Image 1 (cartoon, rainbow, N blue to C red):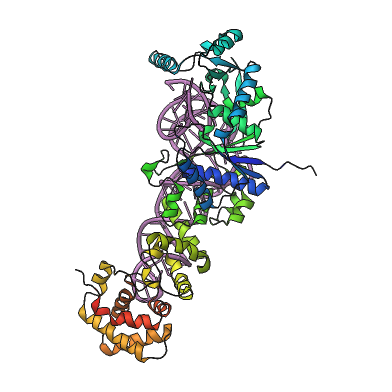
Image 2 (image 1 turned 90 degrees about the horizontal axis):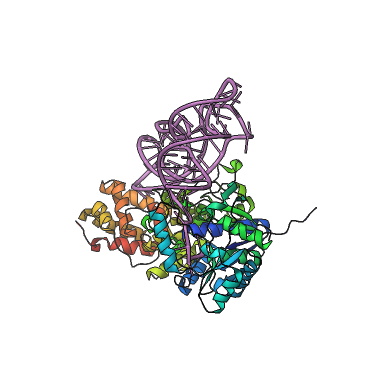
Length: 482
RNA sequence: GGCGCCAUGGUGUAAUUGGUUAACACGCCGCCCUCUCAAGGCGGAGAGUUCGGGUUCGAUCCCCGAUGGCGCUACCA
Protein backbone atom coordinates (compact mmCIF):
# COMPACT_ATOMS: atom_id res chain seq x y z
CA UNK A 1 0.00 0.00 0.00
CA UNK A 2 1.50 3.29 -1.04
CA UNK A 3 1.04 6.06 1.41
CA UNK A 4 -0.29 9.29 0.02
CA UNK A 5 1.02 12.21 2.02
CA UNK A 6 -1.70 13.85 4.09
CA UNK A 7 -2.99 16.95 2.34
CA UNK A 8 -2.18 20.40 3.56
CA UNK A 9 -4.68 23.13 2.82
CA UNK A 10 -5.22 26.67 3.94
CA UNK A 11 -7.79 29.32 4.47
CA UNK A 12 -6.23 32.66 3.64
CA UNK A 13 -8.57 35.55 4.28
CA UNK A 14 -7.65 39.16 3.88
CA UNK A 15 -8.58 41.11 7.01
CA UNK A 16 -10.18 43.96 5.12
CA UNK A 17 -13.64 43.03 6.35
CA UNK A 18 -15.43 40.59 8.61
CA UNK A 19 -15.75 36.93 7.73
CA UNK A 20 -18.41 37.02 5.05
CA UNK A 21 -20.49 34.09 3.90
CA UNK A 22 -18.35 33.41 0.84
CA UNK A 23 -15.20 33.31 2.92
CA UNK A 24 -16.90 31.15 5.51
CA UNK A 25 -17.90 28.65 2.87
CA UNK A 26 -14.34 28.55 1.51
CA UNK A 27 -13.08 28.02 5.05
CA UNK A 28 -15.66 25.29 5.59
CA UNK A 29 -14.69 23.43 2.42
CA UNK A 30 -11.02 23.56 3.34
CA UNK A 31 -11.84 22.37 6.82
CA UNK A 32 -14.02 19.52 5.58
CA UNK A 33 -11.39 18.50 3.08
CA UNK A 34 -8.62 18.50 5.69
CA UNK A 35 -10.69 16.65 8.28
CA UNK A 36 -11.90 14.11 5.75
CA UNK A 37 -8.37 13.25 4.68
CA UNK A 38 -6.74 13.60 8.05
CA UNK A 39 -4.79 16.52 6.68
CA UNK A 40 -3.73 19.87 8.01
CA UNK A 41 -5.60 23.16 7.82
CA UNK A 42 -3.49 26.27 7.97
CA UNK A 43 -4.86 29.70 8.71
CA UNK A 44 -3.01 32.48 7.01
CA UNK A 45 -3.91 36.13 7.25
CA UNK A 46 -3.17 37.98 4.02
CA UNK A 47 -2.58 41.43 5.38
CA UNK A 48 -0.15 42.86 2.88
CA UNK A 49 -2.55 45.64 2.09
CA UNK A 50 -1.65 47.66 5.16
CA UNK A 51 -4.08 50.43 4.27
CA UNK A 52 -7.15 48.28 4.38
CA UNK A 53 -6.20 45.59 6.87
CA UNK A 54 -6.90 45.89 10.55
CA UNK A 55 -6.40 44.01 13.78
CA UNK A 56 -10.11 44.28 14.47
CA UNK A 57 -10.96 42.48 11.26
CA UNK A 58 -8.51 39.70 12.09
CA UNK A 59 -10.31 39.22 15.37
CA UNK A 60 -13.65 39.28 13.56
CA UNK A 61 -12.53 36.54 11.20
CA UNK A 62 -11.28 34.35 14.03
CA UNK A 63 -14.52 34.89 15.91
CA UNK A 64 -16.52 33.87 12.87
CA UNK A 65 -14.49 30.71 12.40
CA UNK A 66 -14.79 29.75 16.03
CA UNK A 67 -18.51 30.29 15.93
CA UNK A 68 -18.77 27.93 12.97
CA UNK A 69 -16.60 25.43 14.79
CA UNK A 70 -13.85 25.54 12.19
CA UNK A 71 -10.60 24.90 13.97
CA UNK A 72 -7.23 25.13 12.30
CA UNK A 73 -4.02 23.23 12.92
CA UNK A 74 -1.34 25.77 12.13
CA UNK A 75 -1.25 29.53 12.34
CA UNK A 76 -2.61 32.07 12.15
CA UNK A 77 0.37 33.22 10.14
CA UNK A 78 0.50 36.84 9.16
CA UNK A 79 1.98 37.76 5.81
CA UNK A 80 3.01 41.11 7.19
CA UNK A 81 5.55 39.23 9.33
CA UNK A 82 6.93 37.14 6.51
CA UNK A 83 8.18 39.90 4.26
CA UNK A 84 11.68 38.46 4.05
CA UNK A 85 10.42 35.31 2.39
CA UNK A 86 8.72 37.30 -0.32
CA UNK A 87 11.78 39.44 -0.90
CA UNK A 88 13.94 36.36 -1.24
CA UNK A 89 11.49 34.82 -3.65
CA UNK A 90 11.52 37.97 -5.75
CA UNK A 91 15.33 37.91 -5.71
CA UNK A 92 15.29 34.37 -6.99
CA UNK A 93 13.01 35.33 -9.85
CA UNK A 94 15.16 38.37 -10.61
CA UNK A 95 18.33 36.30 -10.59
CA UNK A 96 16.93 33.74 -12.99
CA UNK A 97 15.76 36.44 -15.36
CA UNK A 98 12.07 35.78 -14.81
CA UNK A 99 11.50 39.14 -13.20
CA UNK A 100 12.77 42.65 -13.75
CA UNK A 101 12.85 46.07 -12.14
CA UNK A 102 10.25 48.54 -13.31
CA UNK A 103 10.87 52.24 -12.83
CA UNK A 104 7.55 53.47 -14.13
CA UNK A 105 5.71 55.54 -11.57
CA UNK A 106 2.14 55.01 -10.58
CA UNK A 107 1.14 58.26 -12.24
CA UNK A 108 2.79 57.29 -15.51
CA UNK A 109 1.10 53.93 -15.50
CA UNK A 110 -2.29 55.44 -14.87
CA UNK A 111 -1.81 57.91 -17.65
CA UNK A 112 -0.77 55.24 -20.14
CA UNK A 113 -3.63 53.06 -19.10
CA UNK A 114 -6.05 55.89 -19.72
CA UNK A 115 -4.53 56.53 -23.13
CA UNK A 116 -4.69 52.89 -24.09
CA UNK A 117 -8.30 52.62 -23.07
CA UNK A 118 -9.15 55.78 -24.98
CA UNK A 119 -7.43 54.38 -28.06
CA UNK A 120 -9.33 51.16 -27.70
CA UNK A 121 -6.26 49.12 -26.80
CA UNK A 122 -6.16 46.75 -23.87
CA UNK A 123 -4.82 48.61 -20.83
CA UNK A 124 -1.98 46.21 -20.19
CA UNK A 125 1.46 47.20 -19.01
CA UNK A 126 3.56 47.90 -22.11
CA UNK A 127 6.64 46.13 -20.73
CA UNK A 128 8.88 49.09 -21.43
CA UNK A 129 11.16 48.42 -18.44
CA UNK A 130 11.59 44.80 -19.43
CA UNK A 131 14.26 45.79 -21.93
CA UNK A 132 16.42 47.81 -19.59
CA UNK A 133 19.80 46.12 -19.39
CA UNK A 134 20.26 44.44 -16.00
CA UNK A 135 23.40 46.46 -15.34
CA UNK A 136 21.56 49.74 -15.98
CA UNK A 137 18.68 48.67 -13.80
CA UNK A 138 21.01 47.78 -10.98
CA UNK A 139 22.75 51.11 -11.32
CA UNK A 140 19.53 53.09 -11.25
CA UNK A 141 18.36 51.11 -8.28
CA UNK A 142 21.66 51.75 -6.50
CA UNK A 143 21.25 55.44 -7.24
CA UNK A 144 18.07 55.34 -5.22
CA UNK A 145 15.51 55.42 -7.99
CA UNK A 146 12.29 53.75 -6.75
CA UNK A 147 11.36 50.59 -8.54
CA UNK A 148 8.88 47.77 -8.45
CA UNK A 149 9.60 44.21 -9.50
CA UNK A 150 7.55 42.72 -12.29
CA UNK A 151 7.26 39.17 -13.50
CA UNK A 152 8.36 38.60 -17.10
CA UNK A 153 5.49 36.68 -18.66
CA UNK A 154 6.57 34.50 -21.60
CA UNK A 155 5.88 36.04 -24.99
CA UNK A 156 3.84 33.30 -26.57
CA UNK A 157 2.19 30.06 -25.70
CA UNK A 158 -0.38 29.25 -23.10
CA UNK A 159 -0.40 28.65 -19.39
CA UNK A 160 -2.75 25.93 -18.30
CA UNK A 161 -3.69 24.07 -15.17
CA UNK A 162 -5.96 21.22 -14.26
CA UNK A 163 -8.67 22.37 -11.88
CA UNK A 164 -10.30 19.76 -9.65
CA UNK A 165 -13.66 21.44 -10.17
CA UNK A 166 -13.49 23.08 -13.58
CA UNK A 167 -11.20 20.71 -15.42
CA UNK A 168 -8.50 22.05 -17.70
CA UNK A 169 -8.34 25.82 -17.83
CA UNK A 170 -5.95 27.65 -20.08
CA UNK A 171 -4.97 31.22 -20.79
CA UNK A 172 -2.93 32.65 -23.63
CA UNK A 173 0.23 34.20 -22.21
CA UNK A 174 -0.37 37.18 -24.46
CA UNK A 175 -3.38 37.95 -22.27
CA UNK A 176 -1.39 38.01 -19.06
CA UNK A 177 0.34 41.22 -18.18
CA UNK A 178 3.72 41.56 -16.56
CA UNK A 179 2.24 41.80 -13.10
CA UNK A 180 3.92 43.41 -10.16
CA UNK A 181 5.52 41.09 -7.62
CA UNK A 182 7.07 43.60 -5.28
CA UNK A 183 5.85 47.13 -4.89
CA UNK A 184 8.31 49.97 -4.79
CA UNK A 185 8.08 50.04 -1.00
CA UNK A 186 9.24 46.43 -0.87
CA UNK A 187 5.86 45.04 0.12
CA UNK A 188 4.78 42.09 -2.01
CA UNK A 189 1.55 41.99 -3.96
CA UNK A 190 -0.90 39.17 -3.51
CA UNK A 191 0.46 37.41 -6.60
CA UNK A 192 3.88 36.96 -5.05
CA UNK A 193 2.93 36.36 -1.44
CA UNK A 194 0.40 33.63 -2.19
CA UNK A 195 2.79 31.53 -4.17
CA UNK A 196 5.76 32.12 -1.91
CA UNK A 197 3.66 31.06 1.05
CA UNK A 198 1.83 28.24 -0.65
CA UNK A 199 5.17 26.75 -1.62
CA UNK A 200 6.80 27.46 1.71
CA UNK A 201 3.90 25.97 3.64
CA UNK A 202 3.98 22.89 1.41
CA UNK A 203 0.33 23.12 0.50
CA UNK A 204 -1.00 20.30 -1.61
CA UNK A 205 -4.43 21.66 -2.49
CA UNK A 206 -5.61 25.20 -3.03
CA UNK A 207 -9.34 25.42 -2.41
CA UNK A 208 -10.56 28.96 -2.92
CA UNK A 209 -13.21 31.09 -4.57
CA UNK A 210 -13.69 31.00 -8.32
CA UNK A 211 -12.89 34.69 -8.42
CA UNK A 212 -9.27 33.58 -8.32
CA UNK A 213 -9.38 31.46 -11.43
CA UNK A 214 -8.14 34.30 -13.62
CA UNK A 215 -5.25 34.87 -11.22
CA UNK A 216 -4.17 31.29 -11.28
CA UNK A 217 -2.06 31.37 -14.45
CA UNK A 218 0.03 34.14 -12.91
CA UNK A 219 0.69 31.82 -10.04
CA UNK A 220 1.30 28.77 -12.20
CA UNK A 221 3.94 30.72 -14.08
CA UNK A 222 5.76 31.42 -10.85
CA UNK A 223 5.61 27.80 -9.70
CA UNK A 224 7.12 26.80 -13.02
CA UNK A 225 9.97 29.28 -12.94
CA UNK A 226 10.63 28.55 -9.28
CA UNK A 227 10.78 24.85 -10.04
CA UNK A 228 8.07 24.01 -7.53
CA UNK A 229 5.46 21.29 -7.96
CA UNK A 230 1.99 22.57 -8.68
CA UNK A 231 -0.63 22.01 -6.00
CA UNK A 232 -4.10 20.82 -6.97
CA UNK A 233 -6.28 23.82 -7.60
CA UNK A 234 -9.97 23.57 -6.77
CA UNK A 235 -12.00 26.67 -7.45
CA UNK A 236 -15.31 26.90 -5.70
CA UNK A 237 -18.21 28.71 -7.39
CA UNK A 238 -19.31 31.98 -5.90
CA UNK A 239 -22.32 32.66 -3.72
CA UNK A 240 -24.80 35.12 -5.15
CA UNK A 241 -27.69 37.04 -3.66
CA UNK A 242 -31.31 36.21 -4.54
CA UNK A 243 -31.12 38.57 -7.51
CA UNK A 244 -28.12 36.61 -8.76
CA UNK A 245 -25.70 39.42 -8.39
CA UNK A 246 -22.73 39.11 -6.12
CA UNK A 247 -23.72 38.80 -2.48
CA UNK A 248 -23.31 42.15 -0.80
CA UNK A 249 -24.65 44.28 2.02
CA UNK A 250 -27.51 45.15 -0.24
CA UNK A 251 -28.82 41.62 0.29
CA UNK A 252 -28.81 41.97 4.06
CA UNK A 253 -26.41 40.25 6.38
CA UNK A 254 -23.08 39.45 4.82
CA UNK A 255 -20.96 38.80 7.90
CA UNK A 256 -21.39 35.37 9.46
CA UNK A 257 -21.55 36.94 12.90
CA UNK A 258 -24.71 38.70 11.78
CA UNK A 259 -26.26 35.25 11.46
CA UNK A 260 -25.22 34.38 14.98
CA UNK A 261 -26.92 37.58 16.04
CA UNK A 262 -30.05 36.54 14.19
CA UNK A 263 -30.29 33.48 16.38
CA UNK A 264 -29.00 30.95 13.90
CA UNK A 265 -27.51 27.79 15.38
CA UNK A 266 -23.95 27.37 14.12
CA UNK A 267 -24.42 23.78 12.99
CA UNK A 268 -27.47 24.77 10.99
CA UNK A 269 -25.50 27.49 9.26
CA UNK A 270 -22.69 25.07 8.57
CA UNK A 271 -25.04 22.49 7.11
CA UNK A 272 -26.67 25.14 4.93
CA UNK A 273 -23.33 26.51 3.77
CA UNK A 274 -21.96 23.07 2.97
CA UNK A 275 -24.80 22.46 0.55
CA UNK A 276 -24.21 25.72 -1.27
CA UNK A 277 -22.19 24.52 -4.22
CA UNK A 278 -21.58 21.00 -3.02
CA UNK A 279 -23.56 17.76 -2.86
CA UNK A 280 -22.57 14.45 -1.38
CA UNK A 281 -23.77 12.71 -4.53
CA UNK A 282 -26.91 11.11 -5.83
CA UNK A 283 -27.01 8.38 -3.19
CA UNK A 284 -27.72 11.11 -0.67
CA UNK A 285 -29.88 13.29 -2.85
CA UNK A 286 -32.90 12.80 -0.62
CA UNK A 287 -31.03 13.92 2.45
CA UNK A 288 -30.59 17.51 3.54
CA UNK A 289 -29.59 17.27 7.17
CA UNK A 290 -25.99 16.24 7.65
CA UNK A 291 -24.18 16.14 10.95
CA UNK A 292 -20.65 17.44 11.05
CA UNK A 293 -19.39 13.87 11.02
CA UNK A 294 -21.50 13.09 7.96
CA UNK A 295 -20.17 16.14 6.21
CA UNK A 296 -16.59 15.23 7.00
CA UNK A 297 -17.08 11.64 5.94
CA UNK A 298 -18.86 12.53 2.70
CA UNK A 299 -16.92 15.57 1.58
CA UNK A 300 -14.99 15.39 -1.64
CA UNK A 301 -13.87 17.80 -4.31
CA UNK A 302 -15.89 16.01 -7.02
CA UNK A 303 -19.11 17.01 -5.34
CA UNK A 304 -18.43 20.69 -5.90
CA UNK A 305 -20.57 22.19 -8.62
CA UNK A 306 -19.39 24.56 -11.29
CA UNK A 307 -22.22 27.02 -11.30
CA UNK A 308 -22.71 29.79 -8.80
CA UNK A 309 -25.05 29.23 -5.88
CA UNK A 310 -27.78 31.55 -4.66
CA UNK A 311 -28.07 32.24 -0.96
CA UNK A 312 -31.61 31.38 0.11
CA UNK A 313 -32.73 32.74 3.47
CA UNK A 314 -35.84 30.56 3.61
CA UNK A 315 -33.77 27.45 3.36
CA UNK A 316 -31.43 28.68 6.07
CA UNK A 317 -34.43 29.35 8.30
CA UNK A 318 -35.65 25.84 7.68
CA UNK A 319 -32.31 24.33 8.62
CA UNK A 320 -32.36 26.42 11.77
CA UNK A 321 -35.75 25.14 12.88
CA UNK A 322 -34.69 21.60 12.15
CA UNK A 323 -31.56 21.91 14.27
CA UNK A 324 -33.28 23.67 17.15
CA UNK A 325 -35.93 20.99 17.21
CA UNK A 326 -33.42 18.17 17.07
CA UNK A 327 -31.18 19.51 19.82
CA UNK A 328 -31.60 18.32 23.39
CA UNK A 329 -32.76 21.04 25.75
CA UNK A 330 -29.44 20.66 27.57
CA UNK A 331 -27.53 21.38 24.39
CA UNK A 332 -29.73 24.33 23.55
CA UNK A 333 -29.46 25.89 26.99
CA UNK A 334 -26.03 27.52 26.65
CA UNK A 335 -26.96 28.96 23.27
CA UNK A 336 -30.18 30.33 24.70
CA UNK A 337 -28.36 31.73 27.70
CA UNK A 338 -26.22 33.74 25.31
CA UNK A 339 -29.37 35.18 23.78
CA UNK A 340 -30.71 36.04 27.21
CA UNK A 341 -27.49 37.73 28.17
CA UNK A 342 -27.47 39.71 24.93
CA UNK A 343 -31.06 40.79 25.53
CA UNK A 344 -30.43 41.67 29.17
CA UNK A 345 -33.02 39.13 30.19
CA UNK A 346 -32.73 37.33 33.50
CA UNK A 347 -34.77 34.15 33.94
CA UNK A 348 -36.15 33.48 37.39
CA UNK A 349 -36.96 29.81 37.25
CA UNK A 350 -34.99 26.77 38.26
CA UNK A 351 -32.72 25.15 35.71
CA UNK A 352 -34.92 22.07 35.77
CA UNK A 353 -38.03 24.11 34.96
CA UNK A 354 -36.14 25.98 32.29
CA UNK A 355 -35.14 22.75 30.61
CA UNK A 356 -38.71 21.51 30.66
CA UNK A 357 -39.94 24.70 29.02
CA UNK A 358 -37.18 24.62 26.42
CA UNK A 359 -38.19 21.07 25.60
CA UNK A 360 -41.77 22.19 25.18
CA UNK A 361 -40.93 25.21 23.04
CA UNK A 362 -38.11 24.07 20.81
CA UNK A 363 -40.29 22.32 18.21
CA UNK A 364 -41.86 25.65 17.31
CA UNK A 365 -38.87 27.98 17.56
CA UNK A 366 -37.68 29.61 14.36
CA UNK A 367 -34.66 31.19 15.93
CA UNK A 368 -32.77 31.21 19.21
CA UNK A 369 -34.05 34.76 19.48
CA UNK A 370 -37.54 33.47 20.17
CA UNK A 371 -36.43 32.32 23.59
CA UNK A 372 -35.57 35.87 24.56
CA UNK A 373 -38.60 37.48 22.96
CA UNK A 374 -41.92 35.73 22.49
CA UNK A 375 -41.06 32.93 24.91
CA UNK A 376 -40.17 35.11 27.89
CA UNK A 377 -43.24 34.20 29.92
CA UNK A 378 -41.95 30.65 30.30
CA UNK A 379 -38.76 31.74 31.98
CA UNK A 380 -39.72 34.76 34.05
CA UNK A 381 -42.75 36.40 35.61
CA UNK A 382 -41.80 39.64 33.94
CA UNK A 383 -43.12 39.61 30.41
CA UNK A 384 -45.21 41.71 28.07
CA UNK A 385 -48.61 40.96 26.64
CA UNK A 386 -48.83 41.06 22.89
CA UNK A 387 -51.45 43.78 22.28
CA UNK A 388 -52.84 41.97 19.26
CA UNK A 389 -53.29 38.79 21.28
CA UNK A 390 -55.08 40.67 24.05
CA UNK A 391 -57.29 42.42 21.53
CA UNK A 392 -58.18 39.13 19.94
CA UNK A 393 -58.86 36.92 22.96
CA UNK A 394 -59.12 39.07 26.07
CA UNK A 395 -60.97 42.17 25.04
CA UNK A 396 -64.11 40.83 26.70
CA UNK A 397 -64.38 41.54 30.45
CA UNK A 398 -66.52 38.45 30.92
CA UNK A 399 -63.77 36.21 29.63
CA UNK A 400 -61.38 37.68 32.13
CA UNK A 401 -63.85 37.05 34.93
CA UNK A 402 -64.10 33.42 33.89
CA UNK A 403 -60.34 33.12 34.01
CA UNK A 404 -60.36 34.36 37.58
CA UNK A 405 -62.94 31.69 38.37
CA UNK A 406 -60.78 29.14 36.66
CA UNK A 407 -57.90 30.16 38.91
CA UNK A 408 -60.08 29.41 41.90
CA UNK A 409 -61.04 25.99 40.54
CA UNK A 410 -57.40 25.11 40.07
CA UNK A 411 -56.64 26.28 43.58
CA UNK A 412 -59.34 23.96 44.90
CA UNK A 413 -58.16 20.96 42.88
CA UNK A 414 -55.20 19.08 44.34
CA UNK A 415 -54.23 17.41 41.07
CA UNK A 416 -52.47 19.45 38.41
CA UNK A 417 -51.75 17.44 35.27
CA UNK A 418 -52.51 17.98 31.62
CA UNK A 419 -55.59 15.80 31.94
CA UNK A 420 -56.85 17.34 35.17
CA UNK A 421 -56.33 20.94 34.09
CA UNK A 422 -58.19 20.27 30.87
CA UNK A 423 -61.01 18.54 32.67
CA UNK A 424 -61.37 21.40 35.14
CA UNK A 425 -61.41 23.97 32.37
CA UNK A 426 -63.96 22.14 30.25
CA UNK A 427 -66.20 21.59 33.25
CA UNK A 428 -66.20 25.31 33.97
CA UNK A 429 -66.99 26.06 30.33
CA UNK A 430 -69.90 23.63 30.33
CA UNK A 431 -71.37 24.99 33.50
CA UNK A 432 -71.03 28.53 32.30
CA UNK A 433 -72.39 27.63 28.88
CA UNK A 434 -69.49 29.09 27.00
CA UNK A 435 -67.22 27.44 24.49
CA UNK A 436 -64.13 25.83 25.90
CA UNK A 437 -62.14 27.54 23.15
CA UNK A 438 -62.93 30.92 24.62
CA UNK A 439 -61.35 29.93 27.91
CA UNK A 440 -58.49 28.14 26.26
CA UNK A 441 -57.54 31.03 24.03
CA UNK A 442 -58.01 33.55 26.79
CA UNK A 443 -55.98 31.49 29.23
CA UNK A 444 -53.20 31.16 26.72
CA UNK A 445 -52.86 34.90 26.45
CA UNK A 446 -53.10 35.38 30.20
CA UNK A 447 -50.42 32.78 30.82
CA UNK A 448 -47.96 33.47 28.02
CA UNK A 449 -48.76 36.95 26.75
CA UNK A 450 -49.04 35.43 23.29
CA UNK A 451 -51.81 34.17 21.05
CA UNK A 452 -49.52 31.43 19.85
CA UNK A 453 -48.09 28.78 22.14
CA UNK A 454 -47.81 25.03 22.58
CA UNK A 455 -50.82 23.07 23.72
CA UNK A 456 -52.35 25.04 26.61
CA UNK A 457 -52.42 22.26 29.17
CA UNK A 458 -48.84 21.31 28.50
CA UNK A 459 -47.99 24.96 29.05
CA UNK A 460 -49.81 24.90 32.37
CA UNK A 461 -47.88 21.92 33.59
CA UNK A 462 -44.61 23.46 32.47
CA UNK A 463 -45.43 26.69 34.25
CA UNK A 464 -46.54 24.99 37.43
CA UNK A 465 -49.68 25.28 39.47
CA UNK A 466 -48.83 28.35 41.54
CA UNK A 467 -47.79 30.40 38.58
CA UNK A 468 -50.84 29.42 36.56
CA UNK A 469 -53.16 30.35 39.37
CA UNK A 470 -51.42 33.65 39.93
CA UNK A 471 -51.48 34.65 36.28
CA UNK A 472 -55.10 33.64 35.76
CA UNK A 473 -56.16 35.41 38.93
CA UNK A 474 -54.53 38.56 37.60
CA UNK A 475 -56.35 38.37 34.29
CA UNK A 476 -58.43 41.44 34.96
CA UNK A 477 -55.33 43.55 35.42
CA UNK A 478 -53.94 42.80 31.96
CA UNK A 479 -53.66 46.09 30.06
CA UNK A 480 -56.44 46.55 27.58
CA UNK A 481 -55.77 47.39 23.99
CA UNK A 482 -58.01 48.54 21.23
C1' G B 1 -13.98 46.46 -24.65
C1' G B 2 -10.58 41.96 -23.94
C1' C B 3 -9.97 37.23 -21.57
C1' G B 4 -12.07 33.27 -18.59
C1' C B 5 -16.02 30.49 -16.29
C1' C B 6 -21.05 29.04 -15.86
C1' A B 7 -26.43 27.96 -17.52
C1' U B 8 -32.04 21.81 -15.08
C1' G B 9 -39.11 24.43 -11.77
C1' G B 10 -38.84 30.68 -7.71
C1' U B 11 -34.19 28.50 -4.81
C1' G B 12 -30.40 24.43 -3.72
C1' U B 13 -29.41 20.13 -6.22
C1' A B 14 -30.35 14.66 -8.80
C1' A B 15 -30.81 12.19 -13.25
C1' U B 16 -26.66 4.53 -13.33
C1' U B 17 -22.08 9.98 -17.36
C1' G B 18 -26.86 9.61 -24.96
C1' G B 19 -32.52 5.89 -23.80
C1' U B 20 -36.34 8.26 -16.98
C1' U B 21 -43.80 9.99 -16.93
C1' A B 22 -36.83 14.85 -15.67
C1' A B 23 -36.23 13.09 -9.15
C1' C B 24 -35.53 15.12 -3.98
C1' A B 25 -35.52 19.22 -0.54
C1' C B 26 -36.85 24.48 0.61
C1' G B 27 -40.72 27.77 -0.70
C1' C B 28 -45.95 28.09 -2.50
C1' C B 29 -51.37 26.20 -2.64
C1' G B 30 -55.25 22.83 -0.70
C1' C B 31 -57.09 19.10 2.74
C1' C B 32 -56.66 16.35 7.45
C1' C B 33 -55.38 16.79 12.63
C1' U B 34 -56.71 20.72 16.28
C1' C B 35 -57.44 24.91 22.06
C1' U B 36 -53.91 28.99 18.86
C1' C B 37 -49.53 28.68 15.89
C1' A B 38 -45.97 25.61 14.17
C1' A B 39 -44.95 20.55 13.41
C1' G B 40 -46.90 16.12 11.26
C1' G B 41 -49.93 13.25 7.52
C1' C B 42 -52.09 13.42 2.58
C1' G B 43 -52.55 15.79 -2.09
C1' G B 44 -51.41 19.73 -5.78
C1' A B 45 -49.36 23.62 -8.94
C1' G B 46 -44.66 24.68 -10.88
C1' A B 47 -39.08 23.04 -15.48
C1' G B 48 -39.27 19.60 -20.88
C1' U B 49 -33.48 21.20 -19.11
C1' U B 50 -31.61 29.75 -21.63
C1' C B 51 -32.21 30.18 -27.15
C1' G B 52 -30.78 28.53 -32.23
C1' G B 53 -28.31 25.13 -35.06
C1' G B 54 -25.87 20.49 -35.65
C1' U B 55 -24.01 14.94 -34.51
C1' U B 56 -27.18 10.59 -33.51
C1' C B 57 -32.26 5.76 -34.31
C1' G B 58 -32.43 8.87 -29.88
C1' A B 59 -30.05 14.26 -26.58
C1' U B 60 -30.40 17.64 -19.94
C1' C B 61 -25.90 14.92 -21.23
C1' C B 62 -21.49 15.58 -27.21
C1' C B 63 -20.15 19.88 -30.98
C1' C B 64 -20.85 25.05 -32.88
C1' G B 65 -23.05 29.80 -32.37
C1' A B 66 -26.01 33.37 -29.77
C1' U B 67 -27.90 35.35 -25.25
C1' G B 68 -27.59 36.08 -20.13
C1' G B 69 -25.04 35.96 -15.43
C1' C B 70 -20.58 36.00 -12.85
C1' G B 71 -15.25 36.63 -12.47
C1' C B 72 -10.52 38.84 -13.81
C1' U B 73 -8.64 42.92 -16.41
C1' A B 74 -4.41 47.74 -9.87
C1' C B 75 2.48 49.03 -7.18
C1' C B 76 -6.23 45.36 -3.77
C1' A B 77 -6.69 40.59 -2.16
